[in-house]
Length: 141
Image (cartoon, rainbow, N blue to C red):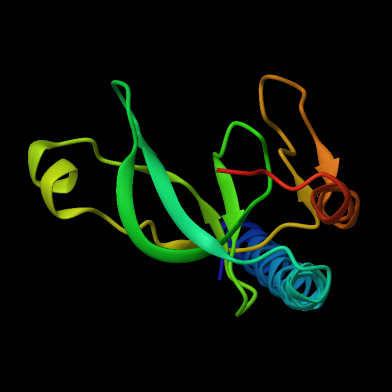
């Protein structure tokens, strides 16, 4: 094996190891966040804050779209929500005619420990703080 091939092989190994470490860190973060969300859901229910039907916003256009989801919004603009099973949702869906007529369900996203990290608006919160804010000031329909 030439020196260049050896260097290339080692670089691929390093990248693969880093990718594996990042994947493991994301999975661990998701597990911790899911546990926090489940605990918060129990606190919401104990505080008399019921899970409500959730509506999604279209990527383009106005209005909202029905979903079969029940849970709690995390932000007053209703773009993020959680359910009692600890799933985290970005409440954005395609706003096509079929979805507007039939409804749509966003897929759950990996739950982050820092909500909004990397967002352009700079609106970031620790998940723990955001859940506590919603316990004290729930988003009402």
